[in-house]
Length: 212
Image (cartoon, rainbow, N blue to C red):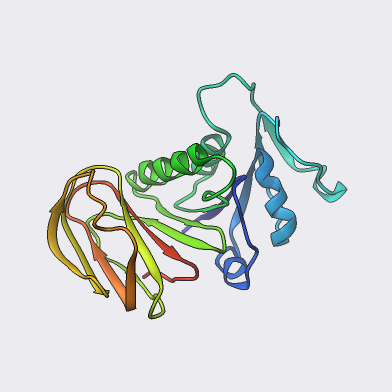
């Protein structure tokens, strides 16, 4: 698989586990996301955006290929970075710095983008050293969570056939409307498995989890 890390401008803690997840990945930075490259010791092959919030970066990054877009555009910098990764053959995406940050609408947009590109067949995950997130589909998703780890299933539509195994509050083949918050703030008893027959949802867990 061709693994691309997309550096976004949200919060990020450069934990050893996060560094390990990014080992060997090709890197594309979106505007201010370039600052995470410094903290993670990565060198992007491409830097995209309108650069309205780009920080000062070391001289070592001065030769990085840039693609500049006008500020008045109908795509976010993160979306443009993902599109660039897809154009370069990405089959797996790790969105770094997609969660938290000063603007909630940015985090919401990143969840939507994760669902969109996962729906095209790409393997997509979101990590920031604090939380891990994974779009759900009809294939069972196993997360090796430690006992006591808090997690939620965030719904973006009505869902059907939702099953959660290995949790303090398990579910078995339930249908829930979008407006239900039943799937918020669950707790892992150990590794969990989540299945979803229909709908759009994301598993959000405290870091650090692993999925298989």
